[in-house]
Amino acid sequence: MTHARQHPIQVVAHRGASEEAPEHTLAAYKKAIEDGADALECDVRLTADGHLVCVHDRRVNRTSNGRGAVSALELADLAALDFGAWKNRDESPDWEYGPGDREDTSVLTLERLLELVADAGRRVELAIETKHPTRWAGQVEERLLHLLKRFGLDAPESAAESPVRVMSFSARSLHRVRAASPTLPTVYLLQFVSPRLRDGRLPAGVRIAGPSMRIVRSHPGYIDRLKRSGHQVHVWTVNEPEDVGLCVELGIDAIITNRPRAVLGQLGR
Image (cartoon, rainbow, N blue to C red; front, side, top):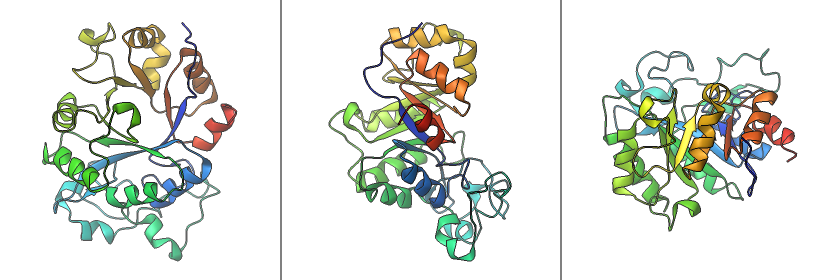
């Protein structure tokens, strides 16, 4: 089923331009902005001393030269680690790593990412994913909304005008966000489609579905049901040209990709 497009597909840089630079680093987000991405995606976790940092995994082992759970480490502990050296130069020939890139490859706080977006010189949206379960539970959303308030982003006039949206696989997380800030758009991420949601419904108050590319490939009819229910559809993680083509055919609203420059090129932008 195809849908007439009224607006261009939004291209969202997944953890920054993460194919070309280390994920969730300032370098990756700078590259994504430079490449023309419409929006940036990040995962947030709360440190032991209450700072929101952009790290996907529960532990820092994969993406840094350190070890341990983010929730058990303080910001100062994380700041001492290198989040860039692991990136394979053979896989990413454009990635140049040197001692002068310290800020670009240090742990990235959400506050610093918000500053980067504010200074971008054009509208760059931000899709923030809360990671659950976590020992800090609802404190994650509380700290997130407090930080967004400092930047004047917690209470947009309407969801359509908001440059920020909150995403999660946890319906409870999204409920907390909506209860505190009803106009902030929320995205319900889907690894699989549960029987109770197969008709295109989403959790109460959520207007954007975030299915995986695997769901889109396997169940294109489900995308049609979401659309018929009036929902937007933001798909992750879309890297292959044929998957981009399928998203275009199905009328997807946002493509979340590790390759924003390549996807923009394929879309003729």
